[in-house]
Every structure is written in C-alpha cells, then in structure tokens.
Image (cartoon, rainbow, N blue to C red; front, side, top):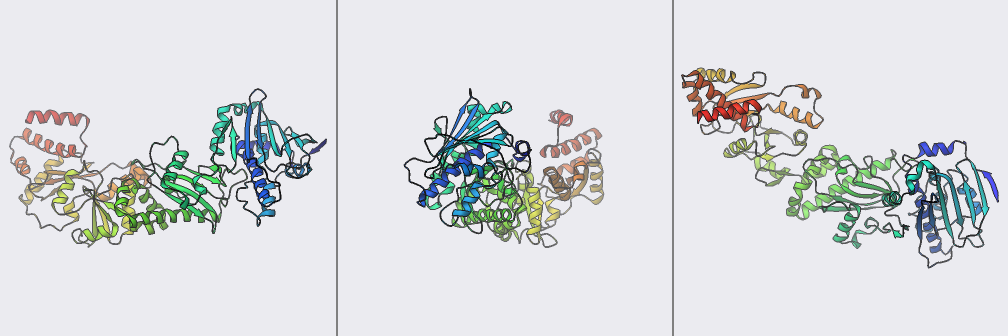
Length: 604
C-alpha cells in the first residue's frame, strides 16, 4: 500500500473545482461517463492495431446508483490503468491521458472518438462526492489491479487489489449536500441529456440509454428521408410537427464539422428558439446555447452540430472566441443558403408551397447576415394580396412601368392587414396597382432594409397618406366643390376630431370612393412600428400617433353636409361620417362606439 500527496500547486484546488471550474454540478456525470467511453475507445483502437488482445466482449459503460449505500458507480471494460498510470494521470492534475494517447497514436488509427483534453474531468467527481474510489486493472499483460481513494483533500492512498476483469470502476460516495443525485430519475435525466449519443453503449437501470451511431455520424448517401424523420423524433420526442426539410453537414477541411439541421414549421408570431440546436463534441453533449457558433437567425432551426474543433473552456461549458468559430458560423450560413437556392431552382412549385413557413426565417437572415442576403435575394419571394409569388426581379419587372412616382422611383405598394385595409386594397386594385402583403412580425424593419438594397425603390403602405398623392399615374379628377366650399368643409370636420391627433385634408377623389379615409404619415407610422418591435428611435414610443383624415370632396354626402341647414343634423352627419371612417380602422371604441351605435339607430 502507498500513501501520498496529489501533485497540485495549491491545496485549495478541490474547493476551486467544486465552486468555480464547472458551471453546474450535474456535469460530473458527463465527465466521468465520457472518461469511461474514452477508455473503451482507446482499447478498441489498440485492438485494431494488434497491440491489445482481441475480445468477444462488447465495449460497455454501466452506471449504478445505490441509494442505501449512498454511492454512484461508473463501470467500464476499457483500457484500465496500471499503478504507474494512476500516479501519472490521477495524481497529477491537468495532465491529460487522452491528449497523450492522441499524440502517440494520431497517425496510426482513428482517434476522433477520444474526448479528454484538459485532464480535469475526473476531478469533477469531487463536486458531489465526499470520497472517490478507483478500482482499475490495465489491459497490459501481468498488470496488477489497484485501488485508489481520496476524500477531497490532497492526500490519497493507493494499494494493490484483486480484480477479475480489465477496466475501471469509479465509486462516488455522495456528499450530504448532493444526495439529489441518488435519485434514479435524476440520473436517468442527466444520462439522457449528456450521454444520449455517446459512441459506446451506456447502460443504466438495466437499459441501454444511448444511440451509438446517430444519423449525423453517417454518410448522407446511406440515409433515407425516413431516417432523418426518425432522428428528428428521437431528438424531439415531444414535438408533434414534422420538419419541412433538412441539411446534412459533413465537413473535414479546414475544420471538422458534422451535423443535421432541420427547418421546423415556424409560427407567425416569430420567437427565436434558443435551445433547439444541440452542440456536441465527438458525440458528447456540450450545450444548447449555440449563439456564438450559429448566427442568430439560424437559432430558429432545430438539430445537432458536432465539432471537435470548437474551442471550449476548461469545463466544456462555454464557447470561447476563436477564428474557427467564425469560420464554422460562416460555413453553416453558406450551407443553409445553398440548400434553399438548390430547392428553389430544382422545384419552384414545392419551394412556393413551403414559403409561408420559411419566409420569416429568410427575411430575418437577409437583414442580419450580408453573406446570406447575397444568396437569398435570388430566391426570396414577394407575396401579393392575391397569394401570388414573385422573385424580387420578377416583381420589379411586373410593376416598374405602372408603379412609378414623380421622382421616377418604383413604388412597392403593400398592405399589412388584408381585412383592416380591404377598402384601400380594393381602391388600389381598381386603379390597376398590385399590392404586396407584408404582414410578418418584423416586416417594418424588412421594408426599410429592402429600400436600402433595391435600387431606386420606395415602399408605401396602401393606407399611408394617400395612394393618389404618391402614385400620380391616374388622370386628374375634376373638383365638384369650389375652393371656398372645400375650405368650409375642412373647417367643419376639424370641429369633430382631435386636433392633436388628426390633420384634416380635402382631396378630389372618385364619387364612388369612400367619403373619408384615415391614413397615417408613412415616416411616422414606420418609425412607430420599428420602435414597437425593437430597433427604432426610442423617443418615438413617447410621441402621440398622428393621422390624416382624408375627406373625399367629390362624394355626394359632402354636398349634403354643406347643404344641411339644421345644425344638429349637420353635426350628426359630420360625426357619423367620421365615426364610420374610424370604425373601418378599428379606432372607434368605448364610449364613442356606444354613441355611434345609438346615433345610427336614431338615423335609421
């Protein structure tokens, strides 16, 4: 038997590990099971090289919880350790056995599955254990089994024991403040989270808990569409939807990256899902907070990314800044754009069928990533109020002659609510104008973005100011009222609206048009929308909304108002006409709505 002191630079290393090194105490299970998987992978590699005797026994890691004894055991039949190796790899903190193994055998066999890097994973055990024991027997001929034990101080004991089989058993004597980990359900949850796709069989409570060959580790040519759908269900067992399509990533230069990204059916009330893409390193779960490696617009996707080249901190809990991270991020963006472009070119009809589900994602990507925009502007589709779809180029060609303003800019007329703006849409269509439907959650941002990208363009909402003032292609409409009559009409309507909120404007429209329209100045409305979604000028939120009350001087009811001698009836007509316009824009509420209903009944 031998007693000694662990070779560390400070006697406070264990409190540091327990409190600061790892972000969450539950990580201990991932680290210890990963180490056991490493041990199995090493032995597999040595057997493949003929440096270890062959065996019919399948590589395996077993986790056993004994609530009465207050222990957790992690048992593997991997490479094992000699007494000297325990001294070297366990008693010298931060000397990584996996790293030494990789360096020794990097040119001889596939060592991709060997995870360890920092040599500190084993010591995560002391976050939950009052005492840790190791029983291990090396694969080497004539090796002696040894037992190592440590109570969390720098002092340890090491002695020879009898052990029948090659491999290692780690026993954690759980501390009082960590007895939650003695619950079977708790351990099962952690193994499912962290070890679900480890490349060696992991057993717990009599069952295998992992898939050793998940879909992303296979070649795309070896998978059918149903295989991808089955993998999606395996990743998200509580999800009832099916993905629209997928992208299989398989890169080995200039960095290693594999994975599968799924396009889910997105909801209109878009919210980025920050926890739907899972990051792995050689099949070991690392995190589902992938913002640093995946552009924000791609966090709407689901799936898996796996890369040993992603730089992690010592505890493997956080991504660190590195040139590879940006390269990987750019590559993923490119692959997503290429996939969408391929779908657009290969089957335009199928792409259009999916457009409602992916348009929010594409718009968000175009706004936030220049490289994505450069490709996406070829397959982006405008949708008009008649549900017809056009590429940017196709739509520009369709409207460039009929939709030009005085400055010769091409005007893109759009609506953001077909029901509330139905009157304005129909009026524009009657004049031969096409109207886009831009009703997405951040289309106010997207419209500004497109104006900066599409040369010589202007976007105008169909109820903004008035179409006739912005697009003056129609023949002038003669006035039926004199200038004095129009001024009188303006003064009358100013008496029935809030002057702080409404500006009354008199226009000569068709007799058949609405008697009155409510519009909002384009700039004010757009800034307000942007501010509500985020990104606009913050002071806009404190400013009152301003509207235009556009009075159609040519409508017969205006002549009736001017000719009415009874002042009470005149006021009723003014108020009724104004309230109808407000009602059409869902702006008549509360007491004013009750008065309108009562007045309407009286007029009937």
